Every structure is written in structure tokens, then in C-alpha cells.
Amino acid sequence: MSQVSAPRIGVLAIQGDYAAHAEALNDAGAVPVEVRNPEQLDGLDGLIIPGGESTTMLKFLERRNFFDSLKEFAHTRPTFGTCAGAILLAKEVRHPAQKSLGALDAVVERNAYGRQIDSSILVEPTSLPGDPLEMVFIRAPRITKVGSDVEVLARRDGLPVLVRQGNLLAATFHPELSQDRRVHRHFVEMTMQKKQN
Image (cartoon, rainbow, N blue to C red):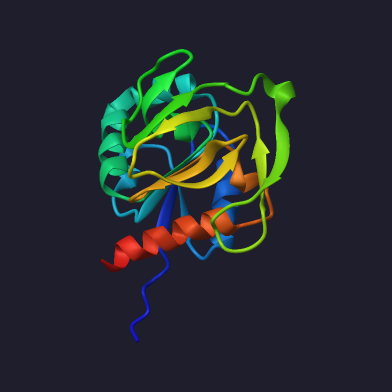
């Protein structure tokens, strides 16, 4: 049986704990690549857009046509957004409205769970194999609405916190801050499936 080589998955290294994402990808069997300019998207099998401050990230992405390159990538290749990354992936952003990549059929509200002080760690059931999942929320956004082809993998207070749509994965929490690597493994598997097709 032919072995498919480990996927090369970029981590947008502008803001957020991209080093923790890289470590999680490594643990999940992928080759992490820090991405700081649009040319580095070439040759990647997938990409993680980490947390941070979405408006600050947008300002950075306005340079060198980076936003458009990222938009094209998210519409065609496996892309995983966490926290601010989930905001950037969404088709509609509220509270307040802002520009986004428009890839994920979802409405996301920014800073919906309050300030940094309102951050929390919860353990919730998930449709991923195994036990309930530890979820670290830091000034988390809220997914208030998803399209019919978006699969909800986990919820908090009845609202989606981990969703998948085709090649896209989005979490309103920070899986890279947990020792549980199932979310990253799930994304690596998604990337492998795309790579094999």
C-alpha cells in the first residue's frame, strides 16, 4: 500500500499562539510551516488561521495582496480557523461587522462571551471519537447561525463551537492550548483525505 507523505500545514504566524499550533500539528503527524507572506501559501496542503485580534490581522493581510491569496486558499484547500481565525473564515461577522474571507457558511459574533476576564475552560461532549473535549475559551466569538451543509461537531450552551464544512474547520475555542490533540488530528486527517484525492 502506498504511503502518503505527511501533509505540510501552514500556520499563519502573524498573531496568536502559532507556536502552540505548530507543536500540536507536529504531535498530530503533520509538518508545520510558519506563514508570514502570501508566497509561503504555495505548496501547502492545509492552513491554520490562529487566534489573535481579527481587526489587527486584517490590517496585516491588506499588505502585498495577502488577503486575496488567503481567500483563494480558504475556498479551495483545507483551512482551520480558531477563535479570530473562525471570525475571518465566516461569511458574515457581527458585533461589529467586519470584512472576512467569506468561506464558511456561518454568522459569527465577535467577543460574544465578554472580556479576557470572562475566559473559561470547559469540558463538553463532541462527535469526535473519545471522551468529552477540553475547550479553552479566551474572549471567544459565538457562532450564532450555520448553513445546512455545516456539520456541528461540538456545542456550548446549545450553540456551535466546533464546525466543519467540506475542507473547512472552525473552532471558537483554542484547541492548541489543550493537551488533547483530537481537533488537530481531525484537521490533519481532513488534509490527508484532500491530498489523496
